[in-house]
Amino acid sequence: MKITRIDTCGLRGATPEGGWSNELRPDDVVHTLVAVHTDTGHVGIGSAFTSEGLIRAALDLLAPQIVGQSALEVERLTETLHQSAFWMGRGGTLTHATSAIDIALWDLAGQALGQPVGRLLGGRYRERVRPYASVLMDEAPVMSENLTDLVEQGFSAFKIGWWKFGRVDFSTDERTVAAARAAVGDRLLAVDAGGSEAFFPGTLSWAKRTADMLADYEVAWFEEALDPDDIDGFVALRAHSRVPISGGEVLTRRQSFAPYLDAGAFDIVQPDTTKGGGLSESRRIGWAAQDRGIRLVPHGWNTAVGLAADLHLASALSGTDLVEYKTGAAYIDELVVGGWELDTDGLLTVPDRPGLGTALCPEALNRYGTNPTFAAAA
Image (tube, rainbow, N blue to C red; front, side, top):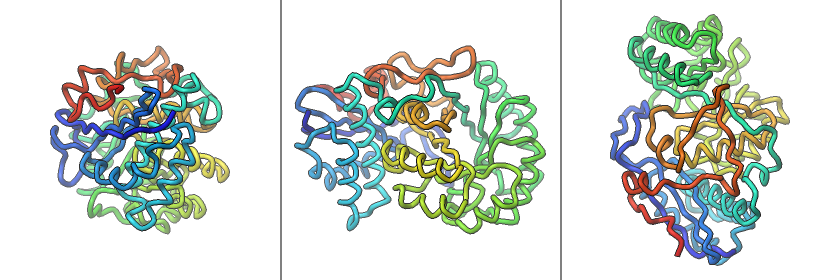
């Protein structure tokens, strides 16, 4: 099974708001699907949380490194891509593109071997995973109604984030958390400050005071409380906080995570498999975290393909029992045949068919894809 070409398909028309300083519009392309084609007719699908233009530019450099080689040597190929990026931008767009390629290669390996990806990643510790509904903060009536609806849909874990949190005043922060807690009851509730937003104003003193407040509301974790580069700040915050501290969603490559793990910056590390290097890197980060008593909960503001990858990752890491689920997102809910369905316990079943175990929905690709036939077998 040799690689013959790599194609892309950006998604537009239903891009959800992201909480960013320059807010996303529906036609902005920030998620890109990648199809790795082979001479056997098998096609692997991956996803990158990056614009299609950047992914295409990255593939000009990356594709020649692996076209013509066996698609079954997943980690050798993706490590080759990482090594080849030293002079051309490792850790940025090249790593984002490598993430999608890596996911697609695992999909191909599973198809070829007749096994779900989670089993190839080392074995499945679980067949079901709890998704936490990921919601942008808003004024209390709007956010509360959204959370109440999600409770009724069967979600049993939630995360609220970004908006005005840490950007206006302390009373706004507490009022927002109080409203969310009232809406979800005693279910899991996490809070994301969105410290990776441009010029995030949160300081260490603010983060410490906020962590004290979040502990009073029994928040499950405090995410991205500081600038993503502030290792020392995270270490100090973790030492102070009664609430677990999490972060890492914008970091890429396992080598970038190592200083945070070694310093004890996080209780929970949150690599994004569609940005950080794919399943291969997320698995290695998970192993390193586990050796240090740190949990991995993947960041997943992505697509149905990224969600499928995260479910397989969660199945293969003993301590990872949660995945992020961006609610109300067409690229999650409509992109794969059959969509996703919570069971009576509020859990998602890890796909058990070969590869990622999902099939792209042609109607959704026609509706949202810049290249709807990108994954068609030759």
